[in-house]
Length: 626
Image 1: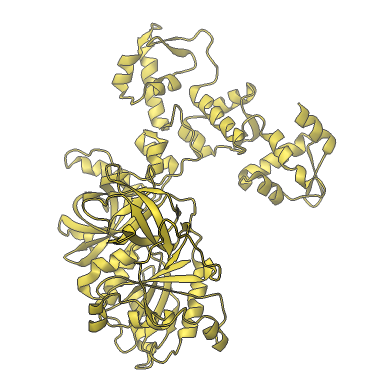
Image 2 (image 1 turned 60 degrees about the vertical axis):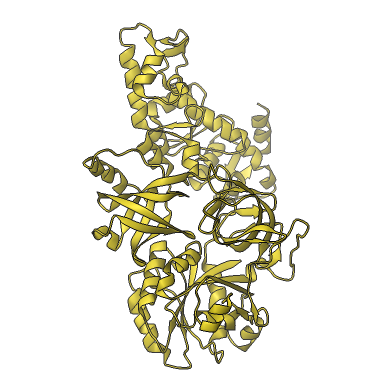
């Protein structure tokens, strides 16, 4: 499904628009309906299939139900798992309706924080207002770039001036190019066009990662008789299923999903993006669940300190005590500014943060900027003058998870640590266990070993490990030069040393492990440089038969050409293109081209005048039998 949050100034018709669009009542409490003012988050939904404009579209994409109050109170129990096959999952659109009053900015951020797109309302008879600007600033800080700009109440005033003023105000933000629609919830004017625009928006949104680790920010939590603890939230990516165990932190209670609903319908599994309600078995944390993230065990690091890149007024010397908002959480934070737009946040309570997370920074209920998480597990930084060095390191951060950068900056780091803060380590090549070592750290260690054994006498390994500050003894053994060995706690000369350096041996092992999984891996030049492997080491590995050279920049494990040839067997009937071969091999073009050219040179494939290849069955059989 698609999930949208509303935004806009108070009394600009957000809730009224959703009533007309979905046929559901977003104001859940009697007080809200009596006052005509949204105070808390509201949740409504409808189905909007892909459709064209016009009367037929308005009929096909009409409201899903009669006037009714939406509720997350109904949650599937242990003995009730159902699905509604009449509703196509891609057709469902859920809305999180947020309050527009300035006093409820934190509530607005709790609803909009996890949602990837926005329905931004500006009243034709009201125009751009203070909370319009506040919400736009907050959404820009959150990195929201997709949505719709809806000019409401177009039956009361010409929508043109309000639209023009909104365009001017949004210029320079990520919301500047939002498609615009003018509507009247009272008369129904423009609702068909709005539904068409919502369907088009769904097609523009990027596909979420279904295999991503779950981090569900609870925006509502309550106890319900017969269901126990209930939490609701927007699942942005990943999947949750009945029976899953979720944590609120390493020391928090384990909560088991005993029931799961999407938009009021019971289901056995939910995949983001989706609005979900969970019935949980277990005890809630002392501080409650609202504003807490429910995470799959072992997939996140709960941290109370994070180094960030700041933007907005927060750069210009606001109070050191601020509030940061991420997901549905609002947490007090102290700021230590390093310079060059970077700072350290000391959080009032730990949060599961990842590199690239965006947070809104507020002061006295006003948005004063944003913070982009660069390091959720930062090192100790000493006296104030040390902050300048830290600022230089953080200023060079790409702002997104990058394996090479994180390894280079940290020197020694476990793949598990990097995975929990958002770094993809599937192509990492650990030197020992799950330890990654930067090129600079590798040089430091090997230099210390050379110095300690310069006189040719054995050196005490424990003393060297302590002097180098190595966290794992296996690192020293893995990084010893080929002519040295670790025996009985001492570094000695190896009588029959493997001529291949330790780094190259580790690379060969990683490539062979990938081949065993059916992957044809080849490190990039940047990855080789990070491992400290140059032309000499590669040539030695090729001469010893430990690697196969496909081109100057592509080296693979022995056996890859043969396995690649076998994978092409289903294409033997007709000539095939490089792209077809690449799909069979599941490799990027930088590997596919030299691999197919290697097969050409060895006679496994024959290149035709149209660049298509054919398999040579006789040679293929001989190659596979060796």
